[in-house]
Amino acid sequence: PARPLFGSQLPAGLRTISNIVAVSSCKGGVGKSTVAVNLAYTLAGMGARVGIFDADVYGPSLPTMVSPENRLLEMNPEKRTIIPTQYMGVKLVSFGFAGQGRAIMRGPMVSGVIDQLLTTTEWGELDYLVIDMPPGTGDIQLTLCQVVPLTAAVIVTTPQKLAFIDVAKGVRMFSKLKVPCVAVVENMCHFDADGKRYYPFGRGSGSQVVQEFGIPNLFELPIRPTLSVSGDSGVPEVVADPQGEVAGTFQDLGVCV
Ligand code: ADP
Image (cartoon, rainbow, N blue to C red; front, side, top):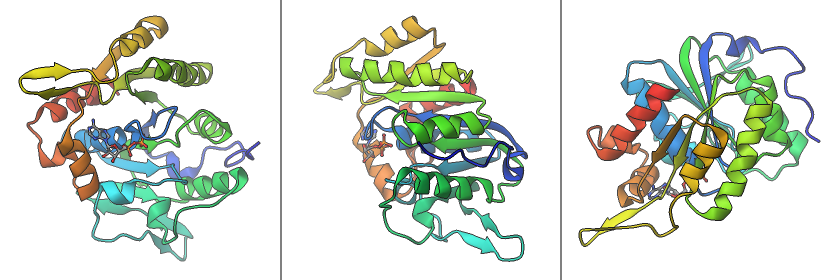
């Protein structure tokens, strides 16, 4: 098992943050990072002071999804702290900005890296820290949730039936830890073509989750080429198209967290 993060004390760097929101998924590739980044920029657009912590050490996507001028984290040598990089006023920390390649690490090492990045960062006063969680519900996720005082969790999934089973695992993990799961985001729900709406992965598992677990909000995001293009271009969709349908969905999600 992974060693406990930060012993038992809340790190000083996290005490100046009002809300810590985990964006979680039980599988990779369902759009968790896309949701985390767009949620963070939506909150920033509403006037909040926001940071994003990319805890996905194995596959950090933050460096692809946002394009800060300074792509390396700076160290304060005296205080031995990490200074986040920034893009459009949002503070960013990711292993991908640490100047190393993709990680080949065992669990305890990963915990160590997460621990160091999260706790020695000078976040300053933040209204929201959005944590892009590593996918799954293993030791690392569990420890992270136990130690970081999360105020809310958002679960991202795709509409397949199989995904429902995974989502249930995630919901159970958060409910055991008494972290309120405020919303499920069903991503890649549908696309429109030739004036018709198509549901390539079927329908209904999102509403099943909401009903079964009493989660108060369900949001649907369409499959949209612009979401993937903006993800790769370094400018989040909600920044590129602030009046669009996707931005509207994220504003509703922003109100929930
Ligand atoms: P995860 O964090 O769950 O691994 P990502 O957010 O990195 O997933 O998304 C995986 C890929 O799918 C990315 O290339 C992203 O741009 C793309 N993507 C995510 N959601 C959508 C969507 N609704 N429509 C189109 N592309 C999407």
